[in-house]
View 1 (cartoon, helix red, strand yellow):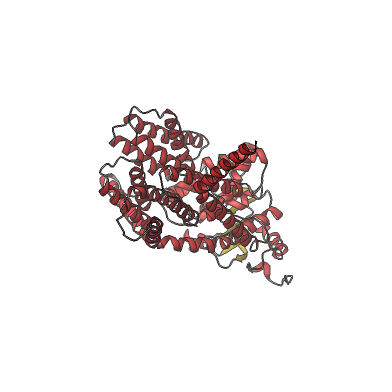
View 2 (tube, one colour):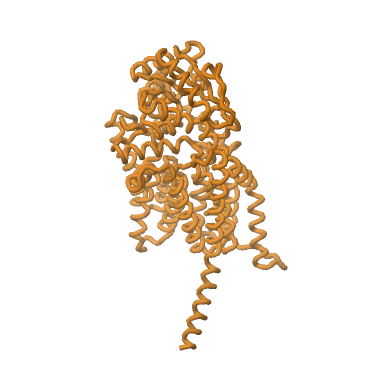
Length: 573
């Protein structure tokens, strides 16, 4: 008996040591991720009066739509009508599913993103081990992905980007396995997963179409016609389904947010005709793509550096092994092509999020290809010394990513405070004094989530009439006045700088400005100052009084200016 216990103890100790050796990079990464989230949360709560607030107002758009879909069966930012406002339908449905089970809670996107972050680390660790990457390299890459993506900032954004990263990495791995496998190999289960992830990718972020096009073309190069057609079907079917639903409700074939971001909503009817008009349009679009590419090269040096590093590793690998169709080379190639497509057609920045999926994917595929890059013989250096030298060289090559890391850690709590002091306070003000009134705004997230207002979105994200007027080039003061009258708008909360962009100065609105709120250290809001207007003359006195009553509740750093502040003695706080 004693001998058996001793034998079992020896076996247990052996397996424990083996487990620690195998999984220590994951343990370190998870611990660092959780601790970073905890410290960032404490830093935020100190600046937001103890309230969890997301770093982007867009998060509240998804939360409002999930709330209304779960409680009222309405896919919209308000409970009264359908809105094609979400650029990530899958994320909205995901939030709706969780909300329908647990109820409406502001913490839901935060907790979901933490779980998604943990899932990313687990999946990355599993795949990197399968790719025979050294544990030291795995640990370095996991930590780099946490901070360079940056995952903590994505958690506090409350958005879908960590979900997008998870789907992208799994999709890319399965694709590489399928395209490099023998035709007669049995991968039927992976085929189902592959097409499922393809459909999910386009529903989580529309940028994913570039990835689907690239992988579809690579299948064509391998004469895998059925796989290429399958990708096309998987990518088109969700879009067509969405189009049918949206158009049936009188909305556009794409979400308004996508149309606005791509500039389609601002395209006028055009004045030319015939071939000259077509040629002019083509030249204009080509110029736009080139301009966007040059601008992104400047602002996206971190992504450019990652392309250079992964491309260099790919060339070294090609020089050492002639075959291109290996899992690692294929993944690196897809990443490089997707990154270049994003630089040409996509956007960089806006709180680190647009290119986040490429940063994580680039670091992952670069690590995967390292085992194919045979180290140059370096006498006198041990194995660990060679690994550390490789890490050092990679780190120096990716210095732009270190700048991104520093910025994300410093700016995330500040961004949360910006939203708390501006959009969140707008929502709280409306919740208290205009909970179900008709209101015109140009930031719709927090005000929709926190209230039951009837909304006129002057940007067009949640108001199809505005987008249609923009599309034909007729969005002006006269039509704004008509829309406000039609919708019975009582007050407006907008940026003056935004109003000036539609030539309000030449033909000013007949609104009465009552006051302004100005925030400091703005890093994420479109403007430092938001203005309050009485759209109906009869609302002016009431709006003045409501702003006065709310003035003592505003965070101390918000500077209040305007008529409602005249002869008001604020309580010293």
